Image 1 (cartoon, each protein chain N blue to C red):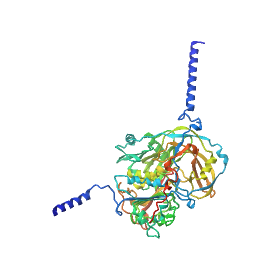
Image 2: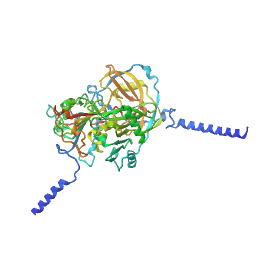
Image 3: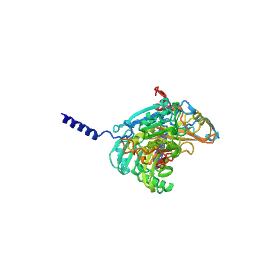
Image 4: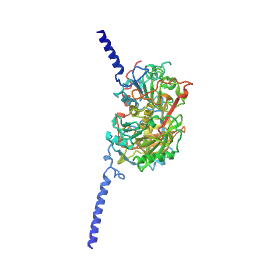
Length: 265
Length: 334
């Protein structure tokens, strides 16, 4: 009887080891998850227009979750006055709570107004501005960031580098952009095809961004990250590099900005 | 009158009759041949137009004034509206597109895209617009600066020749730009885009564009497009430019400016057509006013607003402004 039990246990362990579970990998989290945050209503805060497509923009990232071939889950989805600055702010800073939110998932996306290198919230919880200088992303889990907002990545390598604490790639815009209803859907479609995160980001820009902004204005879709992660695929769709070293003066040379000139089209 | 003369007279009368009938038919039938005819207001169908989207940065004009009001006097009071020709994307049609690029394999259809993928390259077609894309491994993995960048006109010539060879070129295409993909400012790839004027007007929005991508030393590594074929619907009356300015001041416009609550001076007003992005169902191509100028602080701005009167427009109900605010809070507590 004992021998039979041992044999069954061996078979069970072996089966678990070789069973074709859906392909995903996440070295630093227990599951692969997406967090989306969006703000349509600004209540004229600082004179800001309301937006009308941010919710639909990031909601369409759920196409990744709907893929039966992978195991992506929806971690969090907060919108309007439920989207908070502290969700993005490092837990090491006063009021910061990213360990439970933005840095507790694998793919995080924000759609809303951008002002300088800030996500603009419509409430002060803890602050109206989720500043890039208050972000320390990837020290818990986050691999990829998508910023459907103006100017979030408009900065030098050193100005952007501080948030890279294990984050593989930050994707956004170095200029103004238009928040469109199809931004998330197009990223999901290209990432699932599959193409790498960087390629999917600038393909969605090509598919969604207009050819003209204010006079002389160009739209630059930007990917910022470590050179070893530039060809990362989302978990389950291909390979991804290991977590990069934290950005510092000694690693700064390996962090690069890849720019896709959408305006040129 | 001789027999020959009599026969000629009969033929001439018949021809005149036919010409008269054809003239009448073409003058009232909406569609391709109605370009010079105004249809009575009551006959115009309401156009389903998509929202313009909103700039993801602060930008708000407090007041807007014309530098030279006489410049809008020459703008037309009506303009042609076009209907988008529906495109059917099937496994067979995508496999045929793939063969155009030498890509062999079975197509598979996803929610947004239909693809044929092979080791040598992929063909990816947008399910809604039928826009075709071709991506090679060289495109996917290009991340380092190119060793040799050609001159812009060389890229344009090579791109045109490529599109001609692949049956992707039409004689009315115009070069719209030569853009680039760069790492730390150094070019990695160059992309040459072509578009098409419509009724003599420029486009606002995402294309229409057909783009050829070049890797190092002029190697072609990809082709991309956001493209819709259109056909004339009929002419629609336009709101006057003064009304367009009111719409912009009221926020019923896509305003591109990084300043808040500034006054603006208009330097140029023109009519443009809107082409929506890939994956978006667009049924009509309608004219919009594009207004450019400077704010009182000297910075440039652009505003785009609807030129078709609201009485002829149905906005897509699922994208009306404020949709996301219907449930602004679920009472989140942390």
